[in-house]
Image (cartoon, rainbow, N blue to C red; front, side):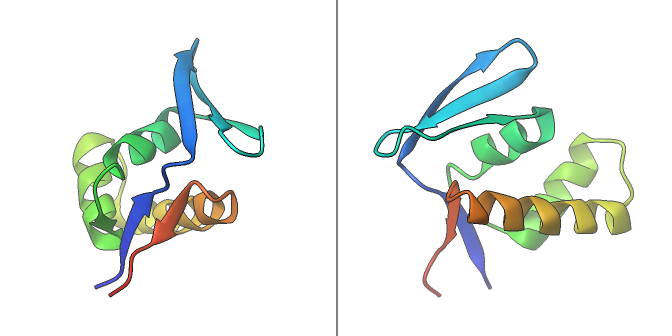
Length: 89
């Protein structure tokens, strides 16, 4: 099972309706919306794609099919931004 976890190079804080984060080494920053910040908090510990889908469908009013597409896009974007990484199997 493929597991995802957040990286340790980012710190952040809630600012209004976004979670604003800065990369400790590069100084890059990102602002996460509510859903992305929920994923960030959840990925403090390793989770699979399917676990994230189950959590989000239980937490939000979203169909599993739509949630699946959203989680895939979110994982891809967070990985590109180096917010999360795959753990070795």
